[in-house]
Amino acid sequence: MPTKTVLIRFEHPHWTKWFVEKLSARFPDIRFLGADDLDGAMRQAGEANVFMGIAPQITPQLISAMPNLEWIQSFTSGVDNLLAMEELSGDIPITRVAGVHGPQVSELAVLLMMNLVRRFPQLLEAQKRHHWDRQAQSLLYGKTVCILGLGKIAETLAKYCSTMGMRVTGVSDGRTTAPDVDLIYPRAQLAEAAGEADFLVVLIPLSPETRHIVDAAILDAMKPSAFLINVARGGCVDEAALLNALETGRIAGAGFDVFETEPLPSGSPLWQAPNLIITPHVGGYADIYHEQCYPIVEANVEAYAAGGPGALEGVITR
Image (cartoon, rainbow, N blue to C red):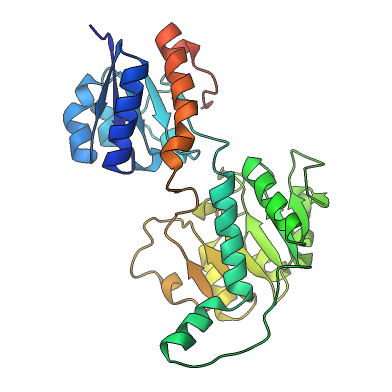
C-alpha cells in the first residue's frame, strides 16, 4: 500500500492529469491525487503529505487544511508568497522549478521590445481603420539593452539580443562577467546603466532589497526615447512612478507582464497608460511548460521517495 500521498494542482486540469499519470507510473509506491481547482484541492488536502502547485495560487487556507504536509513543490520559480506565509511552518521544505524559463520569458521580452520600437499596436489600430500607415521602422539592431539581474533567464535573453546585433549590458552585484554581456554594472550604478540604454529589462528576483528598485529616480535617469520592460515581478517597479513617467512622456513606453496586484484590477489606471503594452503574466507560461517541469519534479520525488523530505536538494531557505 502507498505510504505517502502527493496532491497535485497544476495550471490546467489536463496538465494535472498528465503529471498524476506519469508520476504514478514512475513511483507506484506513492499515491498521486489530482485536483482541478482550489475547491477540489481543499477537499483532498487532509490526505496530502506533499502538495505540488503554482506557488501564487497556494492559499493560507489550503496550507492550514494540510496537517500532514511534509513538502511543497512549486511549479514556479517565484515562491514569494510562500516565504511570507505565516500559516506555513518554517520546517516545511519548499522546492521550485527553476532554470527552464529562459526561452519563453526571453521570447516575450523580445516580443515586447519589437512591438514597442516598431509601434506595432498602432499598426494594428491602423489596420482596423483600413489605414495604410507606412513609416520607417526602428530596429533592435544596434540598440543597447540593459538587463537588470543576470540569472539563467538573463543569459538566454542576452544570447538572443546579442544574436540580433544588440549591445548588451547588465546590472548585478553577483557577477562581473556573463556570456554575451558586453559590460556589467554593480547595482549602485543602476541609474548610470539605465541612462545609456534603449531598453531596460527587469529580470531581478523580488526581495526586500529589490522592491521598487526601479523607482522615479531610475525612470528619470532613462532616455526619453527608452523603453522599460518588466518580465520579473511587479513589485520590482514602482507602478505610480511608471504611470507618471508614461503620462508625462518621460520615457517612450513600456511592456509589462507582471504587476504588484494580479490579476491587474480592471480599475487600474495602468490599463489606460499611454504606450504601455500589458500581458497577463504569461512570460513563463509556455504550452510545453509541464514537459519542462517534469525532469525537475521527477528528480525531487525520487529523492523524497528514497529519503523523505530531508533528502531533497535545492530547498528554498527561509
